[in-house]
Structures are given as structure tokens and as C-alpha cells.
Length: 98
Picture 1 (cartoon, helix red, strand yellow):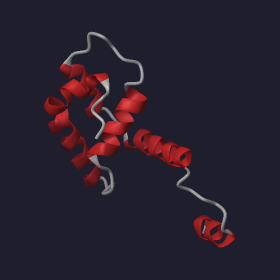
Picture 2 (cartoon, rainbow, N blue to C red):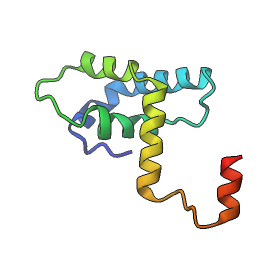
Picture 3 (cartoon, rainbow, N blue to C red):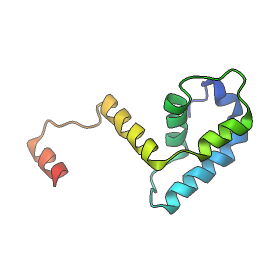
């Protein structure tokens, strides 16, 4: 997990909030969401604009307010950026569109 983000200094304190949010997602059927996925979303999307005088409670509130739809949209866009979806094979495309 990349803790080089400015808010990474709070990582040890916010880990329980990350874990709690991931467990919440699992209750709703999103078994594959990990703390890393959530951390990546927060650092690359939600916390893109840094606040100099941010407080711990604000970071925890951000974590607990993440919606699964926002996380899934971010994950999908990141996958497309990384080129994980190769549409070279016609048969794969047909399977995907079923």
C-alpha cells in the first residue's frame, strides 16, 4: 500500500476505519474490495486536493462516507487506464456482452 500520500502519516490511526468500511462492503456482497482498493480510491480520487490543516476526524469521516458506486466507478476507470481490458479477441468480446 502506497503511504507516500500526505495523509499517509495518519494510516496507522485510520486503519480501523478502513477495515470497518471494507467489512461493510462485504456485508453488501462486495467480497473482493480490499483495504488497498479503498486506500487507492481515497488517495487518487477523494483526496486529490490536499488540505494542509486536515484533522484525523475529517479523514475518518471521508473513509466512512465512501459509497460503493464511487469506488466501483474509480476501479473500472483505473482498470481501463491500465489496459486490463483487451478487446482483441472477438470471442472474448461476445462473451463479455452476453
